[in-house]
Amino acid sequence: MNKQAVVAHILRDCFKVPKYRQGTAFAPANIALCKYWGKRDLELNLPTTSSLSISLGSFGAKTTLYLQEGASHDVVFVNGKEVKAESTFVQNLVAFLDLFRPSPFSFFQIETEVNIPIGAGLASSACGFAAVVGALNQLYGWQLSMSNLSILARLGSGSAARSFWHGFVEWNCGVEKNGMDSFGVSLCEKWPNLRIGLLIFNAAQKPISSRIAMQNTVLTSPFYKLWPEKQACDLNRLREAIQSQNFIVLGETAESNALAMHALMLTANPAFFYSEPQTIAAQHKIWHHRRLGLPLFFTQDAGPNLKLLFLEQDSEAIEEIFPELEIIAPFSTHEMHPEGASS
Ligand code: PMV
Image (cartoon, rainbow, N blue to C red; front, side, top):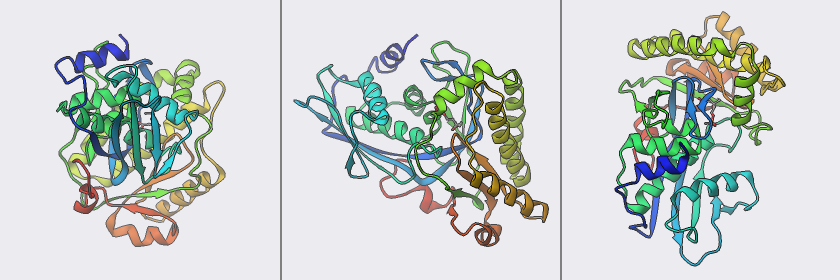
C-alpha cells in the first residue's frame, strides 16, 4: 500500500477542490516520553512499537495555506522568510502536498510561524506536518475526524501523528498493513504542576535525519530485537505513572527510554551519537543534583538538546542550575489555548 492509496481512502467522500480561499491551523510540538524508533512500514511511517508523548502547549507551528491558481510552483515562508525551493525542508513539504493537489498544475503558498528551532530534535517536523494537515482540512472543508487527521500527518512524519492534541498522547503502532489503526489518541489525564524545560545547546539542523538514523539502527544494531520488549514495559509504566501522578516513575521511565534509544544508535553500524559535550555535561549535572535529592529527569530526541522533566515546586531550584532554561507548563490554560490554536 502506498501513501496515495491511504489518502484516496480517507478522502473518498471529501471535497476534491478547496472550499475556502485559505486554511489555517496550529499544532503543538510534542516530546516523546516513550520513543518511536523503528518502522514496520517505511512508506507509510508505521512504527514497530507504540509511543507516548507530551505536547508543548503554545510551542509549535501555525500554518496558513492558500491555493495559488496560475502559479508554477509552491512557495514556502517560515517566520516571514521565503525558504529556498532546493532545501530539503521545502522538497519534503512539496512531496507531501503532491498528495493533496486538486490537479498536478495547482500550487500552494504556505506560510508557517514556528516558535521552536527547526530540525534540531525539537519536534518541528511533527508540529509542522500536523499544522499543514490541519490547514488542508480547513482549506478544503473536509471536516475529518481526529484519527484521520493523525493518519494523514503520519504520512509526512511519524511523530506528527501525536501533534493534534494538548497533554499526553499515545500513538498505537497498530497491526493493519494499511495503517488505518495507527493514529494518535489523547489521554484524558491532566498534570497541572508538571513542567518541561527546554535546554537548547545547538539549534542548528541535525547532521543526520531521524529517518536515516532510525532505519540504520533497525537494520544494523544487534540489540534492536530487545527494543519492543523495553517499549512495552516502559509504555505500561508511563501509563500507570500518569494515572497515579507518580512523578518519579514518570521521570525515571522517560529518561531510561531515551537513553536506551541513544544506546541503540551507538550499537548500530555506522554508530551514531547525537550528544555533544554540553549534552553530556548537562546529563552529569542532572544526575549529580538528583543524587542530592532533586527530582529532575531528562529526555533527548534526535539532536543534542535536552528536555528536562520536573514539578512546579522545583522550578526555582532548577532555574538556578540551568539559568538558560525555557520552562513550559504543558497543562496551563494559557499554554493550552494560545491565540489562534485549534484545540
Ligand atoms: O517523526 P520523525 O521521523 O521525526 O521521528 C521522531 C523520532 C524521535 O523524535 C527521536 C522520537 C519520537 O517518538 O518523537
